[in-house]
Amino acid sequence: MSTASNQKNFQFGNHTDVGKVREANEDYLGYFENANGHLFVVCDGMGGHAGGATASQLAVDSIRRFFEHGFYDNLPEAMRQSILFANQQIYAHANQNTHLRGMGTTCVVVIIRNDEVYYAHVGDSRLYLQSAKGLKRLTKDHSVVQEMVDQGMLKEEEAENHPRKNQLTRALGTLPEVEVEVSQQPFHPAMGDTLLICTDGLNGMINDTTIQQILSERIPIQNKAMKLVQLANDAGGYDNITVQLIQFDTAAASGITEDMATTSKAKHKKTKVQAAPIHQKVDPALIVLGVLVGIVFILFIIGYDQMSDVTPATSELSQEQPGATTADEETSEDIETEAVATEEPSPAKPISTTTEKPSVVKKVNKEEKTATTANTTTKTAAGQETYITHTVRAGETFSSVARRYNVTNQSLQSWNPSIKDQGKDLKSDVTQLRVKVRARHTVGAGDVLNVVAKKYGVSKELIMAANAKTADRASRGEVLVIPFAEKK
Image (tube, rainbow, N blue to C red; front, side, top):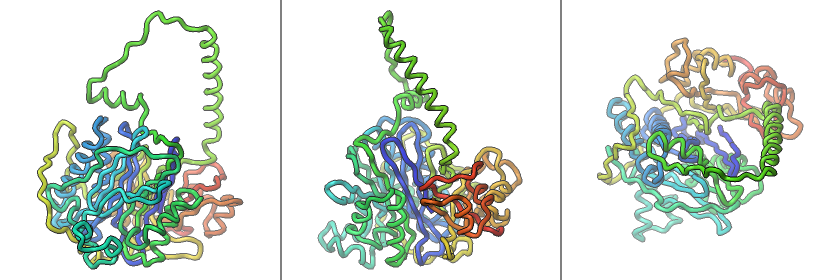
Protein backbone atom coordinates (compact mmCIF):
# COMPACT_ATOMS: atom_id res chain seq x y z
CA MET A 1 0.00 0.00 0.00
CA SER A 2 1.29 3.45 -0.69
CA THR A 3 0.78 7.16 -0.90
CA ALA A 4 2.19 10.00 -2.94
CA SER A 5 2.16 13.73 -2.47
CA ASN A 6 3.39 16.81 -4.29
CA GLN A 7 5.06 19.73 -2.54
CA LYS A 8 6.14 23.06 -3.98
CA ASN A 9 9.79 22.11 -4.37
CA PHE A 10 9.76 18.35 -4.10
CA GLN A 11 7.44 15.42 -4.57
CA PHE A 12 7.45 12.13 -2.76
CA GLY A 13 6.01 8.66 -2.95
CA ASN A 14 6.18 5.57 -0.78
CA HIS A 15 5.29 1.92 -0.85
CA THR A 16 5.47 -0.96 1.60
CA ASP A 17 4.80 -4.65 1.20
CA VAL A 18 4.85 -7.72 3.42
CA GLY A 19 7.00 -9.57 0.87
CA LYS A 20 6.66 -13.16 -0.33
CA VAL A 21 7.70 -15.00 2.83
CA ARG A 22 6.65 -13.07 5.94
CA GLU A 23 3.16 -13.41 7.35
CA ALA A 24 3.07 -9.84 8.71
CA ASN A 25 4.58 -6.48 7.92
CA GLU A 26 6.74 -5.19 10.78
CA ASP A 27 8.02 -2.18 8.84
CA TYR A 28 6.51 1.24 9.55
CA LEU A 29 6.90 4.57 7.80
CA GLY A 30 5.68 8.10 8.33
CA TYR A 31 5.64 11.55 6.76
CA PHE A 32 4.78 14.67 8.77
CA GLU A 33 4.96 18.40 8.27
CA ASN A 34 5.33 20.80 11.17
CA ALA A 35 7.24 23.92 12.20
CA ASN A 36 10.54 22.03 11.98
CA GLY A 37 10.10 21.15 8.30
CA HIS A 38 9.16 18.02 6.37
CA LEU A 39 9.89 14.86 8.34
CA PHE A 40 10.27 11.37 6.84
CA VAL A 41 10.76 8.23 8.95
CA VAL A 42 11.29 4.57 8.04
CA CYS A 43 11.59 1.80 10.65
CA ASP A 44 12.12 -1.97 10.42
CA GLY A 45 10.81 -3.76 13.50
CA MET A 46 12.11 -6.99 15.00
CA GLY A 47 11.05 -9.28 17.82
CA GLY A 48 8.23 -11.37 16.39
CA HIS A 49 4.99 -10.17 14.79
CA ALA A 50 3.58 -8.31 17.80
CA GLY A 51 6.93 -7.00 19.02
CA GLY A 52 8.37 -5.85 15.71
CA ALA A 53 5.22 -4.12 14.54
CA THR A 54 4.77 -2.44 17.91
CA ALA A 55 8.38 -1.24 18.11
CA SER A 56 8.47 0.26 14.61
CA GLN A 57 5.10 1.99 15.01
CA LEU A 58 5.97 3.33 18.45
CA ALA A 59 9.27 4.70 17.11
CA VAL A 60 7.59 6.63 14.31
CA ASP A 61 4.91 7.94 16.63
CA SER A 62 7.38 9.02 19.32
CA ILE A 63 9.53 10.91 16.82
CA ARG A 64 6.46 12.67 15.45
CA ARG A 65 5.36 13.73 18.92
CA PHE A 66 8.84 15.00 19.75
CA PHE A 67 8.93 17.32 16.74
CA GLU A 68 5.38 18.51 17.29
CA HIS A 69 6.41 19.64 20.78
CA GLY A 70 8.16 22.78 19.51
CA PHE A 71 10.55 24.43 17.09
CA TYR A 72 14.23 23.44 17.26
CA ASP A 73 17.01 25.66 15.92
CA ASN A 74 19.62 22.91 16.24
CA LEU A 75 18.14 20.20 14.05
CA PRO A 76 20.99 17.65 14.33
CA GLU A 77 20.70 17.68 18.13
CA ALA A 78 16.90 17.60 17.96
CA MET A 79 17.02 14.57 15.67
CA ARG A 80 19.35 12.78 18.06
CA GLN A 81 17.12 13.61 21.01
CA SER A 82 13.98 12.49 19.15
CA ILE A 83 15.48 9.07 18.44
CA LEU A 84 16.70 8.74 22.03
CA PHE A 85 13.17 9.59 23.15
CA ALA A 86 11.78 6.88 20.85
CA ASN A 87 14.29 4.42 22.29
CA GLN A 88 13.12 5.20 25.81
CA GLN A 89 9.47 4.73 24.87
CA ILE A 90 10.05 1.35 23.20
CA TYR A 91 12.28 0.07 26.00
CA ALA A 92 9.81 1.14 28.70
CA HIS A 93 6.88 -0.35 26.80
CA ALA A 94 8.67 -3.68 26.41
CA ASN A 95 9.51 -3.80 30.11
CA GLN A 96 5.86 -3.29 31.02
CA ASN A 97 4.66 -5.98 28.60
CA THR A 98 6.61 -9.19 29.07
CA HIS A 99 5.49 -10.70 25.76
CA LEU A 100 7.15 -7.76 23.97
CA ARG A 101 10.52 -7.91 25.70
CA GLY A 102 13.40 -7.99 23.27
CA MET A 103 11.52 -6.07 20.60
CA GLY A 104 13.39 -3.38 18.73
CA THR A 105 13.56 -1.48 15.47
CA THR A 106 15.90 0.24 13.07
CA CYS A 107 15.24 3.88 12.23
CA VAL A 108 16.08 6.45 9.56
CA VAL A 109 14.91 10.04 9.97
CA VAL A 110 15.17 12.71 7.26
CA ILE A 111 14.16 16.35 7.72
CA ILE A 112 13.93 18.89 4.91
CA ARG A 113 14.01 22.49 6.10
CA ASN A 114 14.27 25.33 3.59
CA ASP A 115 17.05 24.27 1.19
CA GLU A 116 18.75 21.83 3.54
CA VAL A 117 18.46 18.09 4.20
CA TYR A 118 19.33 16.59 7.60
CA TYR A 119 19.35 12.90 8.49
CA ALA A 120 20.01 10.48 11.34
CA HIS A 121 19.80 6.71 11.76
CA VAL A 122 20.19 3.62 13.92
CA GLY A 123 20.46 0.10 12.49
CA ASP A 124 20.66 -1.14 8.92
CA SER A 125 17.81 0.70 7.21
CA ARG A 126 19.37 3.02 4.65
CA LEU A 127 19.35 6.46 3.05
CA TYR A 128 20.61 6.86 -0.52
CA LEU A 129 21.13 9.94 -2.69
CA GLN A 130 20.68 9.69 -6.45
CA SER A 131 22.29 12.69 -8.17
CA ALA A 132 24.02 13.56 -11.43
CA LYS A 133 27.06 11.76 -10.01
CA GLY A 134 25.14 8.51 -9.54
CA LEU A 135 23.82 6.61 -6.52
CA LYS A 136 25.51 7.18 -3.17
CA ARG A 137 24.69 5.62 0.19
CA LEU A 138 24.60 8.31 2.88
CA THR A 139 24.21 6.01 5.90
CA LYS A 140 26.44 3.21 7.14
CA ASP A 141 24.81 0.06 8.52
CA HIS A 142 25.17 -0.59 12.23
CA SER A 143 25.76 -4.29 11.70
CA VAL A 144 28.32 -7.02 12.23
CA VAL A 145 29.05 -7.39 8.52
CA GLN A 146 29.57 -3.62 8.11
CA GLU A 147 32.17 -3.72 10.89
CA MET A 148 33.81 -6.63 9.08
CA VAL A 149 33.89 -4.54 5.90
CA ASP A 150 35.34 -1.57 7.79
CA GLN A 151 38.07 -3.81 9.23
CA GLY A 152 38.94 -5.20 5.80
CA MET A 153 37.72 -8.69 6.68
CA LEU A 154 34.97 -8.61 4.06
CA LYS A 155 34.38 -6.95 0.70
CA GLU A 156 31.37 -4.65 0.31
CA GLU A 157 29.82 -6.85 -2.37
CA GLU A 158 30.10 -9.90 -0.10
CA ALA A 159 28.20 -8.29 2.77
CA GLU A 160 24.68 -8.71 1.35
CA ASN A 161 25.00 -12.49 1.15
CA HIS A 162 26.92 -13.01 4.39
CA PRO A 163 25.21 -15.36 6.90
CA ARG A 164 25.54 -12.73 9.66
CA LYS A 165 24.04 -9.85 7.68
CA ASN A 166 20.96 -9.76 9.95
CA GLN A 167 22.99 -9.19 13.11
CA LEU A 168 22.87 -5.56 14.23
CA THR A 169 25.19 -3.71 16.57
CA ARG A 170 22.58 -1.02 17.32
CA ALA A 171 18.79 -0.92 17.42
CA LEU A 172 16.11 1.10 19.16
CA GLY A 173 14.41 -0.37 22.22
CA THR A 174 16.71 -3.27 23.05
CA LEU A 175 18.70 -1.35 25.68
CA PRO A 176 17.88 1.69 27.83
CA GLU A 177 20.27 3.81 25.77
CA VAL A 178 21.49 3.79 22.19
CA GLU A 179 24.09 5.61 20.14
CA VAL A 180 22.51 7.65 17.32
CA GLU A 181 24.43 8.55 14.17
CA VAL A 182 23.50 12.05 12.98
CA SER A 183 24.66 14.11 10.01
CA GLN A 184 26.17 17.19 11.64
CA GLN A 185 26.14 19.20 8.43
CA PRO A 186 23.11 19.33 6.12
CA PHE A 187 23.45 19.07 2.37
CA HIS A 188 21.73 21.10 -0.33
CA PRO A 189 19.91 19.00 -2.93
CA ALA A 190 20.14 19.95 -6.58
CA MET A 191 17.35 19.92 -9.12
CA GLY A 192 16.60 16.33 -10.07
CA ASP A 193 18.21 14.77 -6.99
CA THR A 194 16.31 11.91 -5.37
CA LEU A 195 16.51 10.57 -1.82
CA LEU A 196 15.68 6.91 -1.16
CA ILE A 197 14.93 5.69 2.37
CA CYS A 198 14.47 1.93 2.60
CA THR A 199 14.50 -1.11 4.83
CA ASP A 200 16.85 -4.01 4.10
CA GLY A 201 14.01 -5.85 2.41
CA LEU A 202 14.84 -3.70 -0.62
CA ASN A 203 18.63 -3.45 -0.72
CA GLY A 204 18.93 -7.06 0.44
CA MET A 205 17.10 -8.25 -2.67
CA ILE A 206 18.21 -5.90 -5.47
CA ASN A 207 21.60 -4.29 -5.99
CA ASP A 208 22.57 -0.63 -6.25
CA THR A 209 22.81 -0.79 -10.04
CA THR A 210 19.17 -1.86 -10.33
CA ILE A 211 18.09 0.78 -7.82
CA GLN A 212 19.91 3.46 -9.80
CA GLN A 213 18.30 2.34 -13.05
CA ILE A 214 14.78 2.63 -11.60
CA LEU A 215 15.46 6.02 -10.01
CA SER A 216 16.72 7.27 -13.39
CA GLU A 217 13.57 6.26 -15.27
CA ARG A 218 11.23 9.01 -16.48
CA ILE A 219 8.16 7.78 -14.65
CA PRO A 220 6.16 9.28 -11.75
CA ILE A 221 7.84 9.12 -8.34
CA GLN A 222 5.09 6.85 -6.97
CA ASN A 223 5.60 4.41 -9.83
CA LYS A 224 9.30 4.27 -9.01
CA ALA A 225 8.55 3.38 -5.39
CA MET A 226 6.15 0.64 -6.42
CA LYS A 227 8.51 -0.70 -9.08
CA LEU A 228 11.39 -0.98 -6.60
CA VAL A 229 9.21 -2.98 -4.23
CA GLN A 230 7.98 -5.19 -7.06
CA LEU A 231 11.54 -5.97 -8.16
CA ALA A 232 12.45 -6.91 -4.59
CA ASN A 233 9.47 -9.25 -4.52
CA ASP A 234 10.41 -10.69 -7.91
CA ALA A 235 13.86 -11.42 -6.51
CA GLY A 236 12.34 -13.47 -3.69
CA GLY A 237 10.73 -11.00 -1.29
CA TYR A 238 12.28 -12.70 1.73
CA ASP A 239 11.61 -9.75 4.04
CA ASN A 240 9.19 -6.86 4.45
CA ILE A 241 9.96 -4.13 1.92
CA THR A 242 9.49 -0.41 2.54
CA VAL A 243 10.51 2.53 0.36
CA GLN A 244 10.19 6.31 0.65
CA LEU A 245 11.32 8.46 -2.28
CA ILE A 246 11.81 12.24 -2.30
CA GLN A 247 12.51 13.91 -5.64
CA PHE A 248 13.55 17.55 -5.74
CA ASP A 249 12.03 19.66 -8.50
CA THR A 250 14.12 22.74 -7.76
CA ALA A 251 17.45 23.35 -6.08
CA ALA A 252 15.74 24.38 -2.84
CA ALA A 253 13.47 22.16 -0.81
CA SER A 254 11.21 24.39 1.23
CA GLY A 255 10.57 23.08 4.71
CA ILE A 256 9.03 25.88 6.77
CA THR A 257 7.84 29.39 6.24
CA GLU A 258 9.08 32.30 8.30
CA ASP A 259 5.62 32.66 9.82
CA MET A 260 5.52 29.00 10.87
CA ALA A 261 8.92 29.22 12.53
CA THR A 262 8.11 32.46 14.34
CA THR A 263 4.79 31.17 15.62
CA SER A 264 6.33 27.99 16.98
CA LYS A 265 9.30 29.76 18.53
CA ALA A 266 7.04 32.20 20.31
CA LYS A 267 5.57 29.33 22.31
CA HIS A 268 8.90 28.05 23.56
CA LYS A 269 11.58 30.69 23.14
CA LYS A 270 12.04 34.41 23.12
CA THR A 271 11.90 35.71 19.58
CA LYS A 272 13.42 38.94 18.34
CA VAL A 273 10.91 41.00 16.40
CA GLN A 274 11.99 43.65 13.90
CA ALA A 275 10.07 46.90 14.36
CA ALA A 276 8.27 48.16 11.28
CA PRO A 277 9.57 51.48 9.83
CA ILE A 278 7.53 54.55 10.81
CA HIS A 279 6.42 57.39 8.50
CA GLN A 280 7.63 55.60 5.41
CA LYS A 281 6.39 57.11 2.17
CA VAL A 282 4.42 54.79 -0.06
CA ASP A 283 4.15 55.15 -3.82
CA PRO A 284 0.41 55.39 -4.76
CA ALA A 285 1.09 53.26 -7.83
CA LEU A 286 2.21 50.45 -5.55
CA ILE A 287 -1.08 50.65 -3.65
CA VAL A 288 -3.06 50.24 -6.88
CA LEU A 289 -0.84 47.36 -7.92
CA GLY A 290 -1.35 45.70 -4.54
CA VAL A 291 -5.14 45.94 -4.86
CA LEU A 292 -5.04 44.35 -8.33
CA VAL A 293 -2.83 41.52 -7.10
CA GLY A 294 -5.25 40.93 -4.22
CA ILE A 295 -8.22 40.68 -6.60
CA VAL A 296 -6.39 38.19 -8.82
CA PHE A 297 -5.46 36.13 -5.76
CA ILE A 298 -9.06 36.00 -4.54
CA LEU A 299 -10.29 34.91 -7.98
CA PHE A 300 -7.62 32.20 -8.02
CA ILE A 301 -8.71 30.89 -4.62
CA ILE A 302 -12.36 30.79 -5.71
CA GLY A 303 -11.42 28.88 -8.85
CA TYR A 304 -9.27 26.47 -6.86
CA ASP A 305 -12.09 25.72 -4.41
CA GLN A 306 -14.40 24.88 -7.30
CA MET A 307 -11.84 22.42 -8.63
CA SER A 308 -10.98 20.85 -5.30
CA ASP A 309 -13.31 17.88 -5.69
CA VAL A 310 -11.70 16.78 -8.97
CA THR A 311 -8.59 15.47 -7.23
CA PRO A 312 -9.53 14.66 -3.64
CA ALA A 313 -6.84 14.66 -0.99
CA THR A 314 -5.41 11.22 -0.33
CA SER A 315 -3.73 12.17 2.93
CA GLU A 316 -6.06 10.06 5.03
CA LEU A 317 -4.95 6.92 3.24
CA SER A 318 -1.54 5.68 4.22
CA GLN A 319 0.75 2.70 3.91
CA GLU A 320 -0.05 -0.98 4.31
CA GLN A 321 -0.19 -2.03 7.98
CA PRO A 322 2.43 0.55 8.91
CA GLY A 323 0.81 3.94 8.35
CA ALA A 324 2.40 6.59 6.24
CA THR A 325 1.23 9.92 7.54
CA THR A 326 0.92 13.13 5.67
CA ALA A 327 1.31 16.70 6.82
CA ASP A 328 -1.95 17.01 8.75
CA GLU A 329 -2.15 13.44 10.00
CA GLU A 330 -1.20 11.77 13.25
CA THR A 331 0.12 8.27 13.70
CA SER A 332 -1.52 5.87 16.10
CA GLU A 333 -0.87 6.36 19.79
CA ASP A 334 -2.87 3.35 20.84
CA ILE A 335 -0.27 0.59 20.85
CA GLU A 336 -1.45 -1.38 23.87
CA THR A 337 -2.10 1.90 25.67
CA GLU A 338 -3.73 0.13 28.57
CA ALA A 339 -0.32 -1.25 29.48
CA VAL A 340 1.92 1.80 29.17
CA ALA A 341 1.71 5.55 29.56
CA THR A 342 3.98 7.28 27.07
CA GLU A 343 6.04 10.19 28.31
CA GLU A 344 5.76 13.57 26.63
CA PRO A 345 9.02 14.79 25.09
CA SER A 346 10.59 17.69 26.92
CA PRO A 347 13.16 19.84 25.09
CA ALA A 348 14.22 21.29 28.45
CA LYS A 349 15.03 17.83 29.78
CA PRO A 350 18.16 16.51 28.03
CA ILE A 351 18.33 12.78 27.47
CA SER A 352 21.44 11.04 28.70
CA THR A 353 24.07 10.48 26.03
CA THR A 354 26.03 7.85 27.94
CA THR A 355 25.78 4.78 25.76
CA GLU A 356 26.17 1.17 26.71
CA LYS A 357 27.00 -0.26 23.31
CA PRO A 358 25.50 -3.72 22.79
CA SER A 359 27.78 -6.40 21.43
CA VAL A 360 25.21 -7.70 18.96
CA VAL A 361 21.49 -7.15 18.54
CA LYS A 362 20.29 -10.05 16.43
CA LYS A 363 17.21 -10.05 14.22
CA VAL A 364 16.50 -13.62 15.24
CA ASN A 365 12.75 -13.25 15.44
CA LYS A 366 12.48 -12.01 11.89
CA GLU A 367 12.74 -15.68 10.99
CA GLU A 368 10.16 -16.75 13.60
CA LYS A 369 7.10 -14.62 12.91
CA THR A 370 3.84 -16.34 13.62
CA ALA A 371 1.23 -16.52 10.88
CA THR A 372 -1.98 -14.54 11.32
CA THR A 373 -4.81 -14.68 8.83
CA ALA A 374 -5.51 -10.96 9.07
CA ASN A 375 -2.05 -10.07 7.84
CA THR A 376 -1.78 -12.30 4.80
CA THR A 377 -2.30 -10.90 1.33
CA THR A 378 -3.93 -12.85 -1.48
CA LYS A 379 -3.45 -12.21 -5.17
CA THR A 380 -6.66 -11.74 -7.11
CA ALA A 381 -7.57 -11.48 -10.78
CA ALA A 382 -7.36 -7.70 -10.95
CA GLY A 383 -5.14 -6.41 -8.19
CA GLN A 384 -4.13 -7.57 -4.75
CA GLU A 385 -5.82 -7.44 -1.38
CA THR A 386 -3.90 -5.09 0.85
CA TYR A 387 -4.13 -2.89 3.91
CA ILE A 388 -4.51 0.85 4.21
CA THR A 389 -4.24 3.08 7.24
CA HIS A 390 -7.33 5.22 7.71
CA THR A 391 -6.81 8.48 9.59
CA VAL A 392 -9.68 8.98 12.00
CA ARG A 393 -11.63 12.22 11.62
CA ALA A 394 -13.71 13.98 14.25
CA GLY A 395 -17.04 12.25 14.84
CA GLU A 396 -16.03 8.92 13.31
CA THR A 397 -16.80 5.67 15.13
CA PHE A 398 -15.79 2.06 14.55
CA SER A 399 -19.10 1.48 12.80
CA SER A 400 -18.84 4.50 10.49
CA VAL A 401 -15.33 3.52 9.38
CA ALA A 402 -16.47 -0.07 8.82
CA ARG A 403 -19.41 1.12 6.70
CA ARG A 404 -17.17 3.38 4.64
CA TYR A 405 -14.95 0.47 3.57
CA ASN A 406 -17.75 -2.12 3.49
CA VAL A 407 -16.33 -4.32 6.23
CA THR A 408 -17.85 -5.63 9.44
CA ASN A 409 -17.12 -4.25 12.88
CA GLN A 410 -15.73 -7.64 13.81
CA SER A 411 -13.22 -7.60 10.94
CA LEU A 412 -12.16 -4.05 11.74
CA GLN A 413 -11.64 -5.10 15.35
CA SER A 414 -9.52 -8.10 14.30
CA TRP A 415 -7.23 -5.82 12.24
CA ASN A 416 -6.90 -3.42 15.18
CA PRO A 417 -6.74 -5.73 18.22
CA SER A 418 -5.27 -3.08 20.54
CA ILE A 419 -8.20 -0.71 19.93
CA LYS A 420 -11.49 -1.33 21.68
CA ASP A 421 -14.78 -0.59 19.95
CA GLN A 422 -16.66 1.36 22.60
CA GLY A 423 -19.28 2.72 20.22
CA LYS A 424 -18.17 6.31 20.69
CA ASP A 425 -16.26 9.02 18.85
CA LEU A 426 -12.82 7.58 18.11
CA LYS A 427 -10.93 10.84 17.64
CA SER A 428 -10.19 11.44 21.30
CA ASP A 429 -8.42 8.10 21.71
CA VAL A 430 -7.49 6.80 18.26
CA THR A 431 -5.80 8.52 15.34
CA GLN A 432 -5.57 5.65 12.84
CA LEU A 433 -7.24 2.36 11.99
CA ARG A 434 -5.87 -0.43 9.85
CA VAL A 435 -8.31 -1.59 7.17
CA LYS A 436 -8.13 -4.42 4.65
CA VAL A 437 -9.33 -3.54 1.15
CA ARG A 438 -9.83 -5.32 -2.17
CA ALA A 439 -7.08 -3.37 -3.95
CA ARG A 440 -5.61 0.02 -4.72
CA HIS A 441 -6.09 1.27 -8.27
CA THR A 442 -4.12 4.03 -10.01
CA VAL A 443 -6.44 5.84 -12.40
CA GLY A 444 -5.24 5.74 -16.00
CA ALA A 445 -6.36 7.31 -19.26
CA GLY A 446 -10.04 6.64 -19.89
CA ASP A 447 -10.63 5.32 -16.39
CA VAL A 448 -13.97 6.61 -15.17
CA LEU A 449 -15.48 5.26 -11.97
CA ASN A 450 -17.91 3.01 -13.83
CA VAL A 451 -15.02 1.38 -15.70
CA VAL A 452 -12.99 0.92 -12.52
CA ALA A 453 -16.01 -0.48 -10.68
CA LYS A 454 -16.67 -3.01 -13.46
CA LYS A 455 -13.02 -4.08 -13.49
CA TYR A 456 -13.10 -5.04 -9.82
CA GLY A 457 -16.71 -6.20 -9.67
CA VAL A 458 -17.56 -3.53 -7.11
CA SER A 459 -20.34 -0.96 -7.29
CA LYS A 460 -19.44 2.62 -8.13
CA GLU A 461 -21.19 3.76 -4.96
CA LEU A 462 -18.94 1.61 -2.77
CA ILE A 463 -15.84 3.05 -4.43
CA MET A 464 -17.14 6.59 -3.95
CA ALA A 465 -17.84 5.90 -0.27
CA ALA A 466 -14.43 4.35 0.36
CA ASN A 467 -12.70 7.36 -1.21
CA ALA A 468 -15.01 9.96 0.37
CA LYS A 469 -16.09 11.19 -3.05
CA THR A 470 -19.15 13.34 -3.51
CA ALA A 471 -18.78 13.57 -7.29
CA ASP A 472 -18.57 10.81 -9.89
CA ARG A 473 -15.08 11.84 -11.00
CA ALA A 474 -11.50 10.60 -10.79
CA SER A 475 -8.29 12.21 -11.98
CA ARG A 476 -5.57 10.49 -13.96
CA GLY A 477 -2.84 9.34 -11.59
CA GLU A 478 -5.16 9.36 -8.58
CA VAL A 479 -4.92 6.27 -6.37
CA LEU A 480 -8.33 4.84 -5.49
CA VAL A 481 -9.13 2.48 -2.66
CA ILE A 482 -11.21 -0.43 -3.94
CA PRO A 483 -13.39 -1.93 -1.18
CA PHE A 484 -14.73 -5.47 -1.16
CA ALA A 485 -18.00 -6.06 -3.01
CA GLU A 486 -19.23 -8.22 -0.14
CA LYS A 487 -18.66 -7.31 3.49
CA LYS A 488 -15.54 -8.89 4.95
